[in-house]
Structures are given as C-alpha cells and as structure tokens.
Length: 445
Ligand code: SUG
Image (cartoon, rainbow, N blue to C red; front, side, top):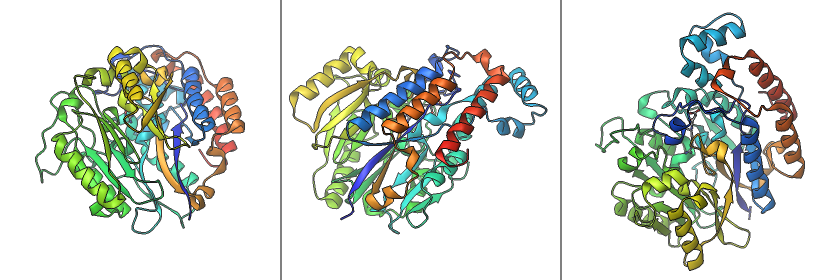
C-alpha cells in the first residue's frame, strides 16, 4: 500500500512584511496598523516553527514569498513612469494602495488554495484550486502567482491537477483551506470534506449575515470547489459560520475551529445551528470513515469568543505525532490568556481526548497581523508516489533550513515602517533576494 502523509507547506514570510491595517474584520490587522514591523524576525520565527516540526518527525515544506511591491498591480491602476515615480505617485494617491502592493500576505498559506487528496477525488489525482481572495485587494493579487508556484512544485500532470482561481466575483469569494477541513481515519483512507461559508451570494437559501464585519467565503465558492475536484457529495458537509463570531473577528473558520483526522476541536459558537452541523458531520464521517468523530466543544464559559480570537486558540495546528497521539501547535499568546491557559492545562491533564500535549511558538510578528500557526500552513495529503514527484528543495531539513536562515539573515531588514514603503531601494532588495531564492529553488519567480 502507498502510505500517505500530511505535508505542511508553510509560507516563508516575505521581505516587506509590514502592518498595513488592510484587513477590516481582522482585529489584529487593524489594531496594529502603522506599527513598526520586523520582517527578519517574522521570517525567522516562521522558519523556527518549520524546523521544529521537521525535527519532531513531520513532513514539512515551505512556499516561497511573492515579489513585492507588485508594480504590475500599480500599473494596472494607471500609475506609470520609472519604478520610483510609480511608488511615489501611488503613495501620494493612497498610502493604503501602496501598502496593498507591498503586502507580504502570501505568507498565510492556509489561504493559498484548497487541496484535496487523490484518495477522495473522482479521477484519483491531487487537486488544487488557488484561492481568489477577492475580499481584500491586497490578497487578491496573490492568486495568479500562487497558482503558478503550486504548479511549479506539483508539476507532474499524471498526479496533480491545478484549477485556476474561481472567477473574481463577490459570488465566488474564496479564502482557500482556512475554511476547509478534511476528516479521515488514516490520511490515506477516504475522507469527509467540511466546508465552512460565511454567506450565500445567489440567494438560493437565506443565511443570516454578520452585521459589523464582512463574511469572506461564499457557499457558492465552496460548492464550486467540491464540484471541480470531483468530491463525492455524500462525503461533503457545508456549514454556515455563525455570523456572531465573524462580528467578534473570526474572519475565517480556522479562527474558531481546527480539525485533524477524526477530531474536531471547536468553539460552541463557531457554527450557526451547531448541533445540526455536528450531527451531519458525525453521520457522514461514520459512514465514510467507519469510526466515530471525536468532537471537542469549548464552551463560552470555558473560553469566551473574544479570548479565543485574542489568543488564537483555535488557530493552532492539530497534528498527529508518530506515536499516534495528537498535539496542538499553539501561539504563545494562549499561555498568556488566563482562560485559555487554564483550559488547555485541564484538557491535557484530563487525558480524556486524543489531544495529549501542547507546544507553544513565538509567532508574534505574524500574529500581530492576524496570522497564527494554522494560518501559516497549507496542508497537502500525499501518498509516497506523489511525494516523490514534488520539487525537492521545498522540504525543510537541516540543509534547507540553514540555507533559508542565512538567506533571510543576509537579505531582510529588521525594521519597516509605512514610510519605508516609498523607498525604491526596498524594491531592489526584494527583487535581488527573490531572484537568488527562486534560482536556488530551480523555478521562476
Ligand atoms: O487575510 N492578514 C491576513 C491574515 C490571514 C490569516 N489566515 C487565516 N486565518 N487562515 C488576512 O486578514 C493583514 C495585512 C495587513 O494589515 O498588513 C492580513 O492580510
């Protein structure tokens, strides 16, 4: 039998990581707007997580950053002239637009794409749909490049199918794997696909919408992906995200829930009509995977939605250790939030659930823009044949870690303010550094 593993592809933080305040509805992003960032520290924090995961025995890989600033985006808006003239004119027109073209947001690879494994797709191939991310302009410019990078890494068409991002319309707002979870027994066995949406655009069904903040993912986008990938409708569940939690700043499902294999760890407020959602998921899971789903619900009395969003408890990664036990890879903010700390200690001490441990990481630079451990990674389930087809340099081991660490230390700034975005030198530094990185990776930038 071809053994399957879950590979985590973390986004390597780019050279222009800064706090643009660009994501309305993402409280960390807006509340840190214009603070000084430290791109070098951000990239090294992410790399340390990747290396620790690899050392723990997980298959760990990375996706390279995209070139920023994206001058082609500014040219499409009518800015012209030399590079520095374009940057200067864009700044004068709107610092927000300049910030958008500089955003290093492709680091949050949970939003890069939805990926479903060959075991579950009608044609027996791994399917990828890069997310269109149309909700936020700075994120929408990632989509085409992300699709290209995924094609470069997973290039063998005998095994990998790449769909273009969904049409760039409000009807098909798609945020990728942040709103998709696959449940299974073992990774190589059949799975159930859980898609969470915030709104329905075609009005075929009326779903309550949040009042304060936008819901990014539509039902129609999730349905299109299930159709494109050839998933069996009997193994798909669509769940309506509770509009209340969106208004508390849960702009993706992975801010209020995380799943792995047969376990769903979630906040009681995560879903609209939660009992119905859990019932449908449990039934389809039992039918398809022939074991029971373990759902671990966290009540508001244990951890309020505000504390969950502040600490990013549910933006932890839930992973299976080589001995079969599960562990949460949590942001260190969980230790600092007393309700969450108390809850996690009791959870692990009880020994009642498959979650037997927690490991904390300092990802503060990313967290301040609303990106925790789970935002930083894209899960790809691959069997041994598919794994052997991937571009080799993207896997983290002692050698690649050292190369990347040195590359970051050599090329990244340790301080970036909004004002620095006007500096054409930053564009030159980014271009040179990415040329070096993509040359080493063996594919184009
Ligand atoms: O899309 N933040 C990202 C965070 C993405 C987190 N991903 C998941 N939950 N899976 C976003 O809101 C902030 C950029 C800025 O403000 O500079 C930003 O894009």
